[in-house]
Image (cartoon, rainbow, N blue to C red; front, side, top):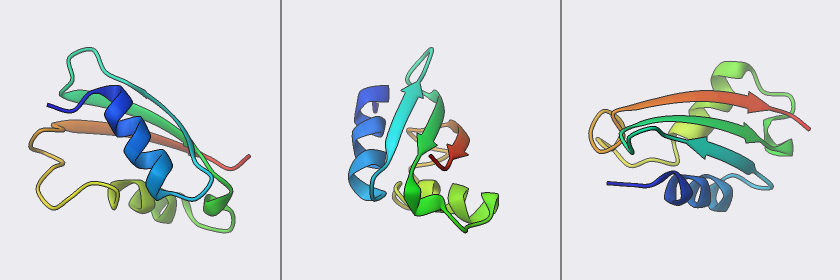
Length: 74
């Protein structure tokens, strides 16, 4: 099972300039706030898609049962 720190590291490594805060009460349900200049000029849907693309096929809904996302542009 992934930990919040593992998800944070993956998001920050994959999305240029990202700073992420990831929390989870049970290491199955996660919430992530991600801030990155890479989101500039993109719709909220495009921003969230960038975050979802960090995770492999089948990981969301599997080991990561739920992921609530909030994205921000600095």
